[in-house]
Length: 228
Image (cartoon, rainbow, N blue to C red; front, side):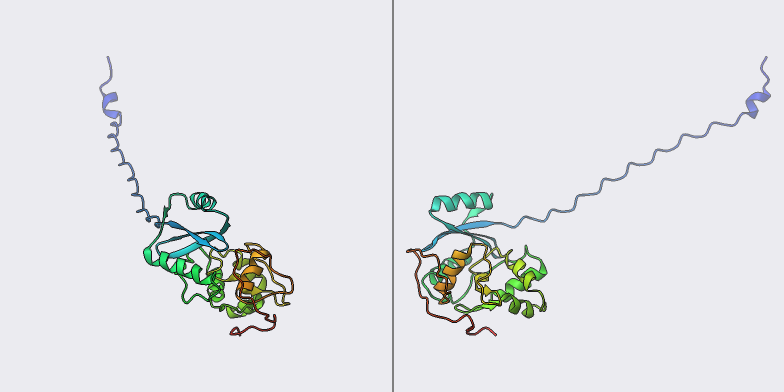
């Protein structure tokens, strides 16, 4: 016979624990809408040019292309998902700018440019470069001084190498301090052609092309009209 005292001496079973509620899954942050992108094809005496951008302005230029088909193929690769043709005001300003430029005239106004993809230093360099007038030039060292980096001529050259809107932001107008032509993403033939079109000609002639207009005049490399 079992002893009743054994039953009373046993500890009571603990109450079952209440399960903790599962942690709430955090709500995903609202997505930032992707900027609406566009591209446009511009025909010029130098060939076809592909322009791309956002609603705020132009942020890329690619050139030259021999025909529209080649330009359109590049646009479809570089601007996948973008629609052809952007805001009407930007399109009108863009085509007017290129028409004036390749007619040998200084464009009266530039289309809006978007520099959002660049670092603050690169933006500063590009903004200063955009101030160099038609038919004149500055040096890498001069741009470095203007942006507060007097010893940063090399950094300026690297920043200009990231210029996605050449011609409109005229990095072809920036030369080396010793009068050498320097570099250019589109090639030195293009840089000489662009400078010749604006009236600046080097001892070494530009690569000739019958499609290009020419308004070149003799201009000493020490002469920088309007650039201080």
